[in-house]
Image 1 (cartoon, rainbow, N blue to C red):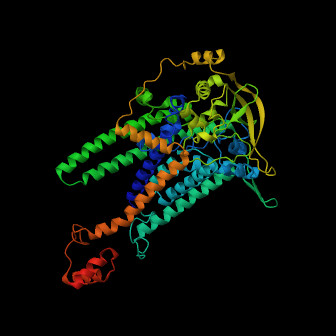
Image 2: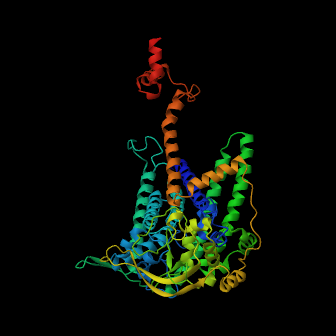
Image 3: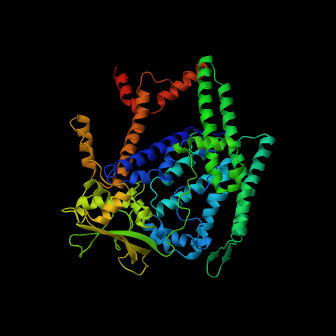
Length: 594
């Protein structure tokens, strides 16, 4: 069986990169956080939960429930469009679309429907193949997930969601597939025994049967028909919502047992590896590690069963009561959740957007444009992955209801009236682009608009919009309306913040670093960090062979193996002498001169 050394390295390095993105993105927005209480609102969300549990064995033991993160607006919901028409709304109504989303939005409707069918196939039918005993089925499941996540990254800004999902899927790979086993591709075919040949044939037949079953189920349940004259593929759902609920009720509990079987197999494998450990001291150390990790794994698995069962109420009620009690005891720690992000389709009548406006006299108003969210009709949608612009995201959520449902919005208006620079940098990192950077506005108000993507024939326009209503009334500092809202939401300033001493060298260095980085846009900063880390690793990879070969303590090849015959060792030494080694060429030249 192929090893998993390289996939483990990829996983750890990928998790490290995602954590770097997450914390660096948060770092750029911390100064404005106290001014606008976004972080208490924004932090307990699936986008922040997922990285903290990426290494958790509980999530790795169960198939995905609602689909990979970042799959916004793709599922049915109350007041929903026809099931297969979801993507005709998704691209322009998602939180922060990309330029590619504009082009995807204008694809033919039949292709949108076919894309929804493919999404259901990849997110519902394929995940059980993660646990398939046949290696090629697991690899097929891996590449299908990669395809879906890459398409989501291209058409939507979902920060590190999709990157984290890609990192999690590396568990489906092995060293053999990643060419980590040297000489594997150059091995000569040797005759195998008939039991192995029979097993290989049966595996191939089972693999073909799985592919055939997936193809048949897709064609049958979604009524796929090819129209050769119009060169299209028609699709429609051939099942009812009740039938889907019954199917979900039938399969949810078996998937739980599938997770149990996978977990038991891993624990037994770990126990078998422990029996192979030599030496009582190592054996004792290994059993302590196995006990601690095994106990934590089982506990996390039991905790994750409760939110997993939310997908089907009947299964939720049939779970072991001990799992419910354990989940209730640690629920406040947010160790597991159902990740039910964006389950409702929004913006069916147009994308709601809140547009802030400022004025000095209350008659002439200037729009306050944000860096990332839609505003200016002629500005193309940005690409901000892997940055998480929390204020722009929260503005998307605020537009879905009245401003009283988003108390932080009142605090934002107050800070803009006060001209607080840390908050202004959440709106525009380059303060000079902020229309009121010289003097804070006297009045601030907000309007609600409906936005739609422009049509292909409209030159220089990415969006078109229509005014809907006033979202937040015109207020100024000391305005009774503003004071009432601040008092209602408990946002009044009770005491001035304490000034902290910045005399220490560390504090001064940190302040200088932030002052140098603050004018940069966060996506550029994050990608710069990644390129810097990549450059360091590249240099390490170039220097490692030379340092290893030039080291006097480096073990000679075959030194610890059984002694070979004198003839073989002589031949090996001749080959070693003849083999070119760029790292030691200078030393050989010196020896020749001596």
